[in-house]
Image (tube, rainbow, N blue to C red):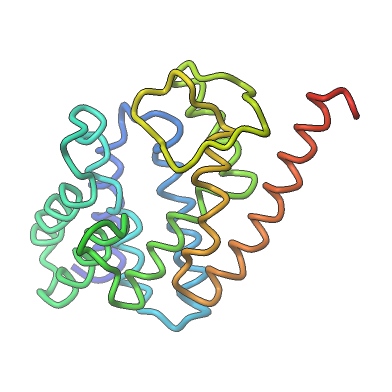
Length: 216
């Protein structure tokens, strides 16, 4: 296949894994991550072909993790992606590069993003969790799990994000997780974008607290 046919094949195959996905991790999320990867990749000088395939395929294992929490969607997705790329007739070097990006995009345990493309995919995936879209996704997730709309702004939530969502809320998600993402970016452009998105979240939750207190 030429690159255009490869890209169409990869995108079509990947999209099939999102037929029953929830809004927080649907095909629209994949497309936003792809857009971010292309933006950051051009600035950072990455291999856009590898990055494009990795972005389209990075969450194909998500549906398996949602059905069985013991499954790591990054590991599962890497295996699925390998099979798809082999069927597309891609070269071994490209396949291994894309597989590494997908396996390390969670950045858990020993799976550290070691290539520029892997670092960009990691940053792009995290950027989609913060800013205006991050807030929208946090509230969508809250609706999916019957969480509180607003919780105590002043609580010290520590760092515990349990699977038990009974005392969870978008505010807890922001304080425990989202507010820390900007400090975990791996590329220059990713860091710049994360700072802007983080500033927006701070303004939003400050305004939300004022409205809940009846100050505005």
